[in-house]
Image (spheres, rainbow, N blue to C red):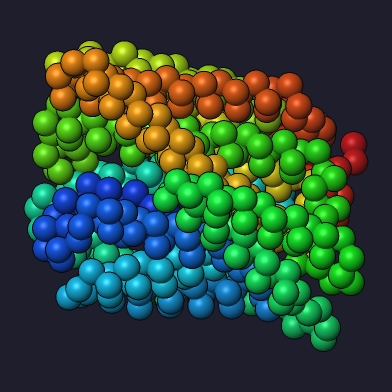
Length: 483
């Protein structure tokens, strides 16, 4: 019993650490106007408060996952927490724009280390399929709900105090996570020969990912072309080196590949929804920072309930695909509803239904996505797989956000040229972007429903005496009980 309690305490610590990281991808959005005013950012330079974090976070995920496999997940997790907390202090106290951007870049490094190994540690801790489904549901809420919680927390802290606190709030949380993690996380196994790090491969893939993110957020096609070339060189190297950073056999696992595609499309829709919904509330409906944060409360509450109380039960009863498809379709409907939101919209009629559906869809779908991605991976490569999962979500989010914001801006400019009023033109741009996001979510549901092939595994009867069915797990992790 004590062992069970320790595992769940470890899960809570890992989720709190990852929540701290996920929050930083969205918490600054509501505070950007205040940051610009205080530190004198130009409009173009202000984007670097977000971009500096995305660049280093996305660029170092795969390397961090591999370091976890080679040096120990616990060690990498603790190092990432320390780097993130120190960088948060630097951001919160930054007197100039340059120092804030530098602090955000270091936050991205620490965040990559924490996120890349957290999922791997959960897989290591929970080897029983039923327990793992519940643990993944909890972790799924943290990853999917972090965006909504981030907007809420950013609005509350900025509205009641100042933008500095969106960074300084990480300090007590990070210190608590570090102390607790040292007590409850499993000690890294001592292995005489852990292998070597493919340094050149790490440089190539990190440079490729950073160039691609930079090219996306800055709309520079030649940078994206450069990133594709670097990625091709990386793949060629990985096919020939003795100890690759990313064994290419990982991408021969059907469920791993399909879950990455679903993750890219899903994150593209999710990131855009949080970003554009906040802008719609602020710029079209005239909400202040605190009101925007409070508007996201329904999403957070429904997402938490579905992630913690509904998702794992659906997976155990129906397998991975049905709840995945249903959750993604609910998200698509949510975005479609927002694509009809008018200039004079009302919260109860035009905002709340979408908030509730998005919360339900994200809460139900995220657990199956994670289980599908990790289910076929051997334990000794779980850190790498975790890094790949996080990379696909981050890259999908960055790409989707860039594409949908570009669509929105183009539509707004076109409407202005046709003589529409500024507010109508702005809202027209948002409507088009929400509609495109709905297509992303629907396509993710289609891909997951058609191509995902999780193999069911017979499990013992649950407490009610009804047989449950779980996804296939690696034979080296979970053995099928006899009888």
